[in-house]
Length: 126
Image (cartoon, rainbow, N blue to C red; front, side, top):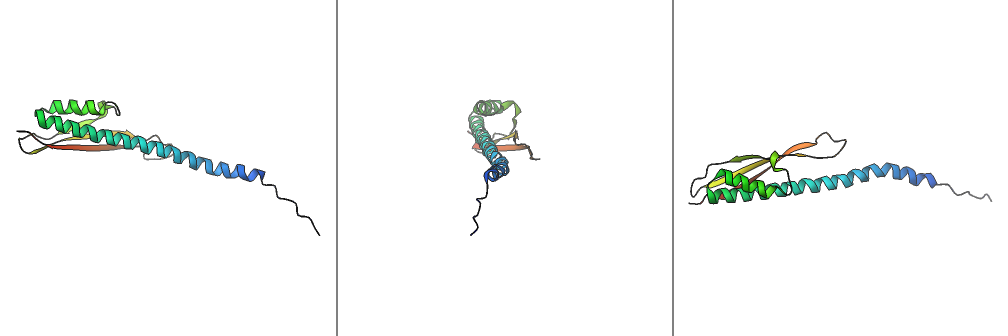
């Protein structure tokens, strides 16, 4: 009877690891970047609501923009935000529209930058 020699598989694990590691690294960085983008979107939405609220109360677009800047400041760079306001007529809805350029930091992907938008709408006070 012939004895079977055990196959040596010491290098197989290394090859499998080399194949899987880049995918795992990209997955981890994708999760991190998605979290960063989600946080920026939530901060932008919050800033739009705060700005619209202040604008509806004071009827001063500059006060609304300043309130939006203060609300956005901890998380995102407010100097890059583009602000657009609608007229504030008593009893009618007024809005502040924010646009923020966001850049993903993912290598090997063509789409790295896009614009995030948020809009806050409140009824203008009388």
